[in-house]
Length: 149
Image (cartoon, rainbow, N blue to C red):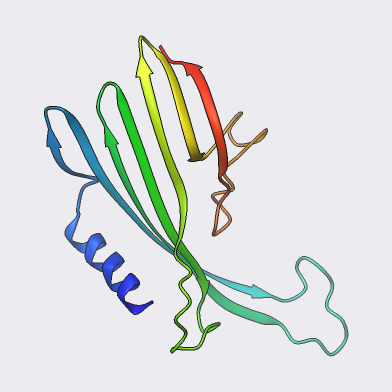
């Protein structure tokens, strides 16, 4: 777990822009995200029972995304770790790093086909959204066909 966080810190420091390098035949991008959130629960969602104490904790999301794009093929891969600070023992070997996005998109004459695990966001996330306010987000395994102009 420690090496995952060190990797994210290294990438945050040494990749100042999202485009790491460009070639004539395509662009490769690396994006990183480290988001922490503290919460204090004192009966906001449900009234506390008598004798219950308030709860407070800090959770985090560490995400790394890799992308490749040329005029015909686009590929996206993204992995993340979502955890609550202090909820796991230090010696635990179980990995919680998950692949949350893996898709490929073929484009030709403004038509496209995108298949794989991906975000779907329609009507400003009202009809079907990504839930990015949630630490883990929402992803779907779909084939998406469309037209872009």
